[in-house]
Each structure stands twice: as C-alpha cells, then as structure tokens.
Amino acid sequence: MSGLEFAVLSLTVVLASCLQGSIGFGMGMVAAPIVALLDPGLLPGMLIILALLMTMAVAIRERAAINLRGAGWALIGRLPGTAIGAYLVAILPHRWLALLLAAVVLLGVALASFGWRPVPTPRAVITAGAASGLLGTATSIGGPPMALVWQGSSGARLRATMSAFFLVGSAVSLAGLALAGAVDRHVLSTTLAFVPAVGVGYVLSRYVNLFLTKERLRWTGVGISCFGAVLLIVDQIR
Image (cartoon, rainbow, N blue to C red; front, side, top):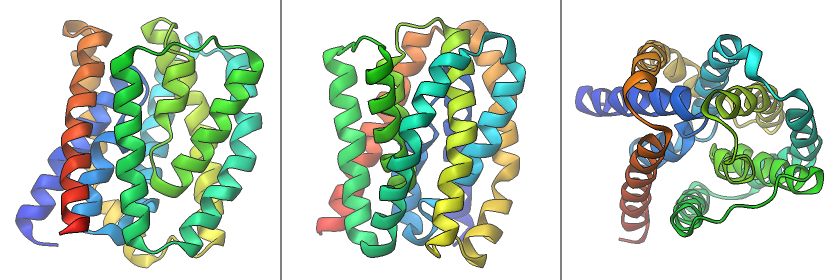
C-alpha cells in the first residue's frame, strides 16, 4: 500500500468511525468500498476488527440507553447468519464478494431513500439480526438491516443498542472468519496501523453529535456509501 493509499484509507476510516459513533452504524458502508478498491484481501476481517473496537467504545459511552431485550432478539438471529456468511467468504472469490458488497450498499441506500420503516417486532428483529450476521460476516456491512428495523429509536438509544448488538455480533463474526481462515497476518498487521484513525473518529463523533442532526449524518453516510459502491462496481467490471 502506497503512502497516498494509506492516507486515503486513514481518512476514510476516520470518517467511517465518526459516522459509526454518531448514528450507531456506517463503518462498513463507508469504508468497505474503498478498502475493496485498494486491497480486497483485507475484507471483511479488517473492518470487522475496527468496528469491534468502535462499538465497544460507543457501548461503554452510551451504556445507560441500551435496549437489552431488543439486542438479545437480534443476537438470536445473528448466530445462524454468521455461519452462512463465513461459508460464503470461504468459497467465493474476492471479485464476487466485492460485487456482493456493492449490491448490499446500494440496496441499503435504496431502502433508506424510499423511507421503508418495518415494525420492530421480535420476529422482525430476529430476521434483521440474521441478515446482519450474514452480510456483516461476508462483506463487513451488517448495519443496514438493524438500522432499518430500529430506525424509530432515539439517537442515544439507537447508538447504544446497535453498538451492544455489534459488539457481540462482530466478535462472533470474527471468530467465524478465523475458523474459515480469512483472518491472516496481513489482515492483522494492516488493521493495527489503522487503530489510531478509529480513535480520531470516535473523538470527532462526540463533537459532531452536538452540531449535526441524525438525519443529516445519515444522508451524509448514504451519499458517500453510494459513491463508493459505484466506484467499486466500475473497478470490478472494467
């Protein structure tokens, strides 16, 4: 990775971490298309590890607002979804994973744009948890299903509950990827270099929350995600 690529990816991780800390999701949607363009071998392991660190920090910061019951239902679905996602990582080539990643991002953008708001019943939350586990493990983008089902929650409650869910879910996904042989020394060493960028994003999120509304942050993430997904598709088909 060149110096310029490292700088671009560091800035991307800062922005993605800031978004994650502000609205409870978004790291994978923002950063994954850029990582896939620069070094697809880092996916999904690198972003799952960085997301694990970020969600731990946010869950501790917002612990009083966590909806434990909702997070519990979601985790019931996460386990089987994770197993399927780890299997896909083991059998699919990077090209197909990259295209799957782009499709997931664009689907999330479309659903957000049309304003679909599912009712967060236990069945809906379990289903969303399963989809999040599959997509999060296979592509590092597990946020959209949970964001859709919990989008009626307040800012603090949404951030806290999403972070608690992803803290446990990301750990499970990481274990599944490790068993599938998808987390090697290259992934670990490169991820370590971007941990400071996560810290910067976390600090920024605390200040951003004071000035920007959840809606503005959400649409910022959606716009950047859409741009990155389109770039990724163009790179894969040329």
